[in-house]
Amino acid sequence: MKKLLKSLLAIFVLTIVASSCTTKGDGQLIGVMDRPAWKGINPYGMVYIPSGTLHIGPGDQDISNTFVQRSKSISIQGFYMDDTEITNNEYRQFVYWVRDSLAHTYLDNFIESEDGEQRIDWEMEVDWEDETLDELYYQGDEKFAGKKELDVSKLEYEYQWYEWQKAAHDRTASRTSHIKKELVKIYPDTLAWIRDFAYSYNEPMTRNYFWHPAFDDYPVVGIDWQMANAFCYWRTQLWNSFQAYRGDGVNSEDFRLPTEHEWEYAARGGHDLAPYPWGGYYVRNAKGCLLANFKPGRGNYPEDGGLYTVRADAYFPNDYGLYNMAGNVSEWTVSAYDENSYSFLHDLNPDMRYDATEEDAPAQKRKVIRGGSWKDIAWFMQSGTRHWEFQDTTKCYIGFRCALTFLGRSINDF
Image (cartoon, helix red, strand yellow):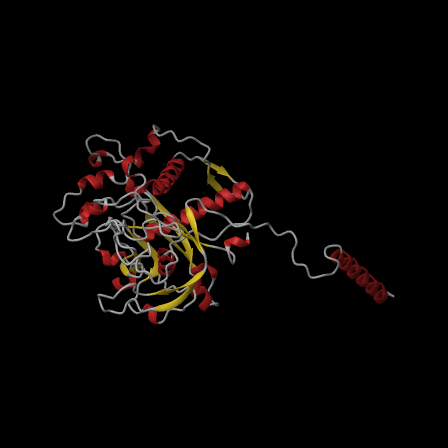
């Protein structure tokens, strides 16, 4: 009798479960119905680069004859890219955020969130006259001419990244072993304007370039590769916080540095085999005007309209709407540099990365830079020209712009 009752009870439970399932889809396979809507985003200051194919390699003869730009046909997934290099004023938003977070920390302006964590109360006003904040400024002998100046060495920011490649090839390792963190000083190295040139008077640029309003819309420089990555991580957190506040519930891909081949694809502007972003074979137009900010001739720097850098939106954009993909400042990419990488890279979204540590050899710390700068000759302006710099090096002619992977087949689908 007991067995019969248990059997009847089991049948009753199964009947209830089955009936509850049929009320949500009539027993059909329809997927989960309460998924959030996703319409994509149109990031401010970015342009959409559609998926496509291009031939990477030299746009003209390889004058170095080192075969570091072997021709190769590849395909690239669609993505967004900043239409200009990150400007001084845009990067200053990052610097001020770090400065203000330190001030709030010193003033103990915290609130407890719903999950029990202590978080900065950004609604609180910072009293910059509070003596508690004195340690944020230069003190004693470090003061110059009695000025109250921010000690920029205190501006540090910790960013994180996940080692997806190692996680994919080592499934036995713990998740925590693939989560990496780096604490970096984020204030631009303004002294690069002096250090990069011997016997050259550039002190006015050191004193004024980053903070003076005259240069707000000029590309930020003095940024090493790690600082650029920290900015991308902060920008992602800034956007995610806004989405959470708005209640979207769905986050986009992370802002990041472009791969070197995303950069080249974007720079070509749809002109696959053209050597320059504007699609032509020369650095001058039909009227003889120079089309980018570089070092024409034998040191006639101002001939193109700029002695040093120029506004980030100067000159005409390429056909994707991107400004200064040739000249002005060279730009960091996320890719590690190897002379022979074109020989073994995959033809689908090719990319080579290596997270170098302090203990690694200098050659392992090389990262690809692209585009040439205001102090480079015309050969570096070519879209296919590869060059590199050490990841912990700051230069007055290297900046960056961000990329964001597009989630979907085409922007026209939305």
